[in-house]
Length: 160
Image 1 (tube, rainbow, N blue to C red):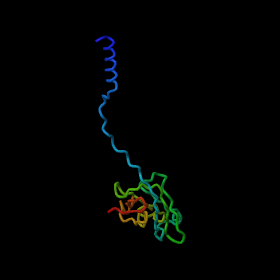
Image 2: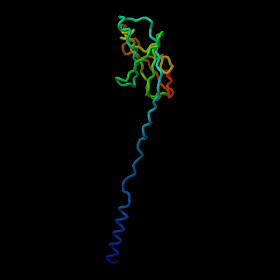
Image 3: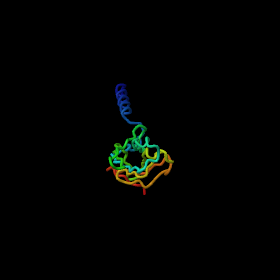
Image 4: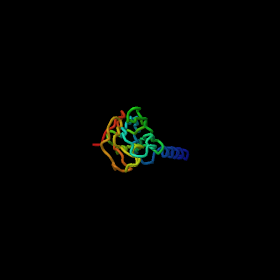
């Protein structure tokens, strides 16, 4: 074999070696995170008839809080004149039904209850997405919250 043939053969062998993939096959990584689902939810709260503290504090608005909300995202509910019902709509509520996560914790601050042991915090008489709250965490305290799931249509669902 001539020198030229050997060089050509060596060059072809080198080219073939460079074109080969010597890296091991990478296993498929984790599946992508599912896109979050969000909805709007109607909130209703029925305020007790009597104000339990000084009258001046009774004129404040009722405020709604949800566990998915960051500080400053709470909403003020609007009163229905002539009734004791306060309503509002919360947007961007994470859907958590069917239960694939913990229920949402919800509550209101009611100025009529400020001088009670709860300091005005309650989940009693609260409807979330049309569902009355039946399950509570730390009832009768300043940390009282109702537990609720929310479906894609903004309908509230009590834990089982």
